[in-house]
Length: 481
Image (cartoon, rainbow, N blue to C red; front, side, top):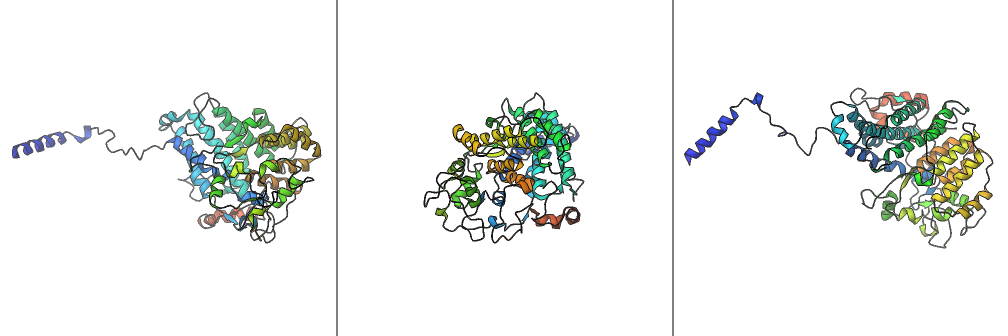
C-alpha cells in the first residue's frame, strides 16, 4: 500500500512539474452561474418588465379624476408629494444602456449577436430609452439626461432642461429607426415577442412616440412649419398606428409574477372606484342606468347597491360604503391578462385632429376628431351604431372638443391622460380640487423630486430648482400651458 501511495504522489508531482506558463486550464475558474458578459436578452426582458409600473400607476388616474379611492382617500388628496425616480434609472435605463453598450463594443458584439442583430438590439433599447426619459421629464420636469448613464465619469449628473431633453430624444429616435436592419429582432423582447413583424412594430412605436412628443411641445412651438410641427409631420409620414389592431400594448400573462397589476390590487383590497366627476361627465344628458356615453358601460360596473352608475367622491371624506359606487370594469380588475396601453389609434387620431387645427398637417380636423371617437368606441367594444349616434351629439367645434374627447379616450392611460390634461391647460376638461387636498393647492402639475435626489445630488438639484421653480406639485413643467 505504501508503494502505491508513493507512486501516486510521484505521478502527481511529475504532472505539476510541467511549466504553468504553458498550461491552459480553459474554463476551469469560470463560474457558469456568474457569466463575465451580461445576457442582453435578459437585460431587455428585465427593463421591459419594469416598465409595467409606468403604465399601471394609480396616482395620475387620481390626479385627473378618472378614479378615486374607496375607504382610504390617500391618492385622491395627493398625500404623496415626493416621488423617487431611482427605479426608472436603475432597473430600466441602466439595463437598456448596457444592451446598447454590449452591442456596440467590438469585444462583446459578437457574443451579443446570438440575441438578435446588433443594430436591432441597439435600436429597440434606444427607442425604449427615449420613452422612459420622456416619461421622467414629463413627471418631474428637469432631470438627469445627458450625463445620467455615464456611471464611471458622472457620479453627480446635471439636470438637463426639458427643451434639451426633448431635442436629444428626437435625435435618439431618428438614429434608432435608421439603425433598424433586416436582421433578427432582439430576443428577450416581451412587448413585441420575436416574430416576423417585430421590427415593424418597433418602427411604429418609435414614430408614435415621436408624434406624441411633438404635440406635447405645441404650446412652446405652435407655428405651422415650426419645430414641433416638423417633427410631427416626420413621424406621421414615417408611419404611426393606423387601426385598433395596431394599438401599442403591454402584454400580461397568467403567471402571478407577470400578470395584470389591477387584478392583483383587487385580490387584496377593493379600493379604486370610478370618480364622480368622470361618471357624471359620461352620464351627460342620459341617466345613471342608461348614460349618454355608451363607453361608461364598458369602463365601469354598476354599483352593487342600487344597480346604477355612481362615481366615488373626490375628497378627503372617502367613500366608506363601497357597495354604493361603481368600480373599474371587471374586464380589467378580474382579468389577469388585460393589457396596459402605451398608445392607441384613438389617441393618434385626436393628435392628428389637433395638428390639422393648428395647420401643421393637411386634412380635416373634424374628420380626424370623428375617427378618434369611433376608434375609442371600437377599442372598448361599443357598437358602430351606438358610436355613430354619439358622434352626432358631439360634433367637432374647436380645440375644446378635442380636449374633451381625448380626455375620455385616455381612460386608464394614467400618465398620458394627466400629461395631456396639463398640456391642454385652459382648454382642458374642467376639474375641481378635491376637498381636503393636502399635497397641492391645485390639480398637480408635476411630481416633486424624491428625498434621495435632494441628499445625493444636492448641487445639481438646487441648480434645477433655481431654473424650474419651487419643487412643488403646483409648479408647471416647461411645456405646459
